[in-house]
Length: 147
Image (tube, rainbow, N blue to C red; front, side, top):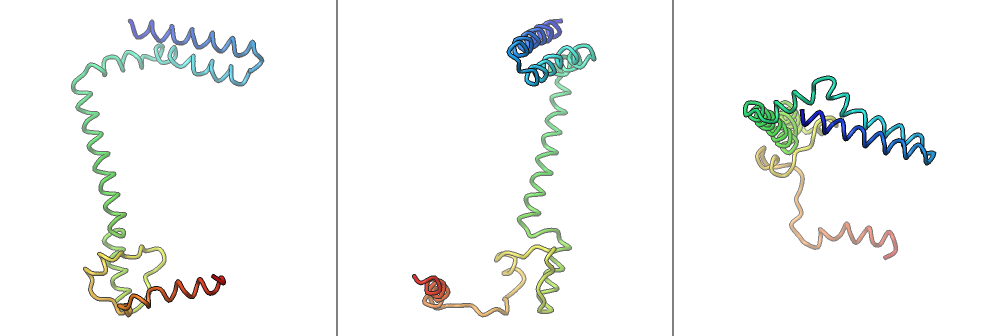
């Protein structure tokens, strides 16, 4: 009963604001405000407000919301772990097989990061150990640009 009264008051206030807005020749904004103002009355008339009021005080409903939140959390966590791990198991296997054959992995498959490379084994690419060699690329770029 109180929820219906509040929704009716909110709708009346919104329609009043829409009338003032239309009086100021802002018809598009007035129509949008009127649409928002009619939503609470429509929700009362369809029974949604009564259902929400009974749901708000139901412990079973809150437990259900908790279960839905836990499910969402599991979906989000597994997706984040999958993205961080370099894709699905099938994609990682294909990338590993391509490296063994000496091929580059297909473009649709993600490249593995350093942690995945260590788990697979040593790479065939030569590694630089001298610190001066690390800066030779930077020096070449600077010389190219005249710096």
